Image: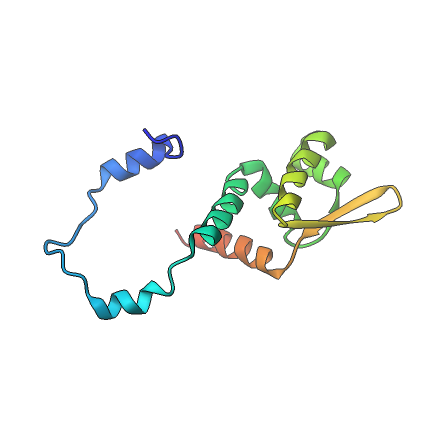
Length: 132
């Protein structure tokens, strides 16, 4: 089993046989149209790293708390029922991927989602899950 492939992914793969083409004919018009739209390897790697950071339930819960307003570390720790140190560790990873930003006000540090793209990504995924 591939280290990156989880047990549940393997179960999904094995439970449904993926249909394939019976004839192996490449449709050149479709190929040429789509070829320029395929992600370059470097950008795909960057996106995979971000999705990897988002693969943690605690980080997603932090994002959900920040989806509507900025919050200080103390508030986030109380909401998450985690220590401030643990919340800071998770926020550090989110900040390194430029998913959250922060500002200082006196002794408090307030975090928010970095920009509207992150809010849209979070909202779109949450909405998708509500539809299922």
